[in-house]
Image (cartoon, rainbow, N blue to C red; front, top):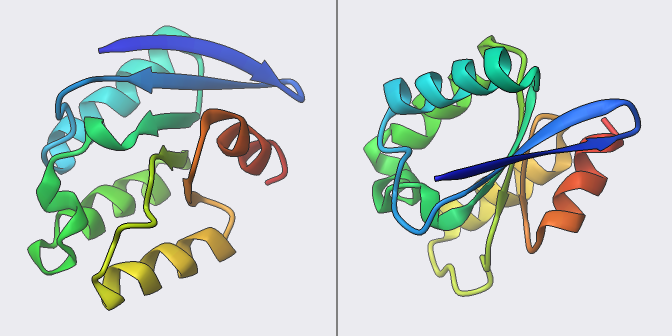
Length: 121
């Protein structure tokens, strides 16, 4: 896992890159969130899709709901970066669409789009 910090509009965003899943459940997500908040003074996070366990993208597993509830409860913002065009699950497509309409959680194609969404909160 590699974490860098980028400042956009006086807001510090942590950019997390990982080639393997590091967010497997709500506890691992919470551990990363709190580490980023206290070590990097950030409350917005950009994470690549590969950092999430595959079960995150299976809505019936409940993992996405648990993790995103932590994001909301602890007043973070999250942008997940990746190619979501290949998703065939209608519920997941709807979930991504609805998330992107809000101000807290975004599914985007690249880091620049993520930072743009987060800075306009």
